[in-house]
Image 1: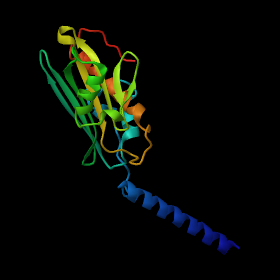
Image 2 (image 1 turned 90 degrees about the vertical axis):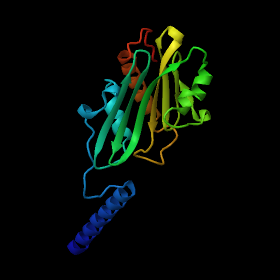
Image 3 (image 1 turned 120 degrees about the vertical axis):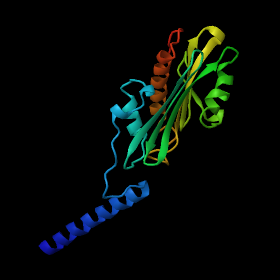
Image 4 (image 1 turned 45 degrees about the vertical axis):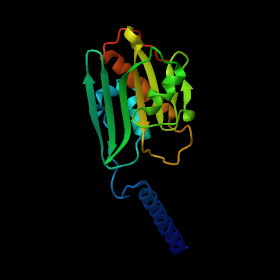
Length: 205
């Protein structure tokens, strides 16, 4: 009886080990190596200071050995550009970008079909759902965009886009990561609004 029980335990452990190794293989991580860590101290400053930033990135990140950030900033007297690349090993799995956008002659629909759709990479506007009531915000399964007013001259706004290129769950459901993308877009937009010395009040809902 003891031999049978011992054999059963060994077989079960072997099965668990095989399952773990198989899962790790599918995710692209060796079962004998730990995944890397994502540290708040290393994150791009232009992602903003929201307490939701790092948890959102951790939720989005595919399991890899190393994570890193690369920040871009270009500030002018009347222009603003900023961005962040979040890398897992050699893959930029998450990209953010904020650019000044003249929205004076735009409606919400033309903005969604234009800057929101075309920044970083093209997204079919039909894939977008609107979020917020007073906010120009749209989100799809892998992209969020948000416009905030900045300067009264020409009704200048800032458009922030967050693009998820690779994720922890490639076969995720339609709404799996939408809230994380929205949280990152709101935080990056708030940072850009202050960094660009916008004079119009910030309204993000």
